[in-house]
Image (cartoon, one colour):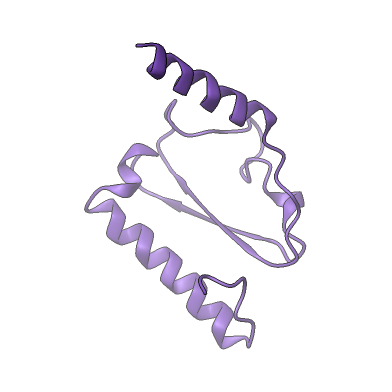
Amino acid sequence: MRRLMALFQNNGLAAVRNRPRPLDGKLLLIRPKIASKAGARVDGDPMNGWGPLAAEGVTLRWMEGTHGQMLQKPWLDRLADNMRCWLDRINECGDAGPALGP
């Protein structure tokens, strides 16, 4: 039980202390249409605070379901489609975007 409580405490501290650094590029933000406590949100800001962090802007996409459902079928397929479409568009413009692997 102590290990579990330490895990919760460390996760809470990480969430409070996290300060994302700006990115010289574009971001894709995919949000669920159904709000839940599982997903973070900044009231009144559809970009959830990500807007000022991307020098080349943020593309916002909404999808059906909740935050927790996004990684379950059939929503997972829709999530992958959104990501694939966005990456394909970036590549068509000659901008490969951020490196995705080695």
